[in-house]
Image (cartoon, rainbow, N blue to C red; front, side):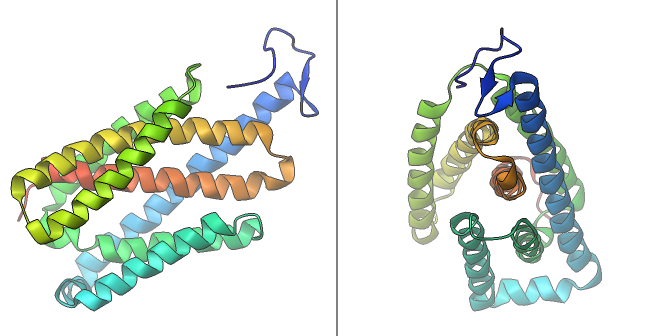
Amino acid sequence: MSNYNYNNNYQTYQGFGVKELENKVSTVMKTVYLKMFFALLVTAAVSAGIVAAAPQISYYIATHTWVYIGACVVEVGLVIAISGAINRLSSTTASLLFYLFAIVNGVTLSLIGLVYNPVSILKTFIITAGTFGAMSIYGYFTSRDLAKMGSILLMALIGLIICSIVNIFWANSTFDWIISGLGVLIFVGLTAWDTQQIKNMAQQMPNASDGRLATLGALTLYLDFVNLFLYLLRFFGNRD
């Protein structure tokens, strides 16, 4: 995973001393998690606020498919814009687009408040946080190269998306449970792999890119967390 020797505290890697590089990576990862946490907080606040103060918005989205699809298109567009243009965006612009995405996602996720009771949503969130945290810690500290696993998981994710689209028309409940189980496994694995990828990128990229990398990393792990939460909710959520 790394191309330098930790046993030599004076050896350098791309112009950094070992200790300096460790501090750089640690700083980037702390920023990643801080941005991700704040984005999740924004999403939760928007979603809970809509359910509590303006549930008619959720009902309107739920009963007007074109509005929901439009919101999803906006979300996908923001993800593509951040990921595809990250090197051309300033750190501030990338962060603003990320938090805008978190707001829009909070609006669409308010729909789960119409289906599941708040206690089960909170319980699932806690389970997700514990699972995500454990896998992210593993991805950060493991000496095992997860690249091969990541390639397999990305192919599995594509298959999962295809299966999900097929089941929209097939509407098979058993198949839906299978998809949910596979979704949990895939995003558990992706959490570890993405964490390792972000760490590796932090080691290799110059300091000037740290802010943009932190935003891209936060977006990646945010997506892992939210998708893991949604799949787990199908198992632990109690419907009203």
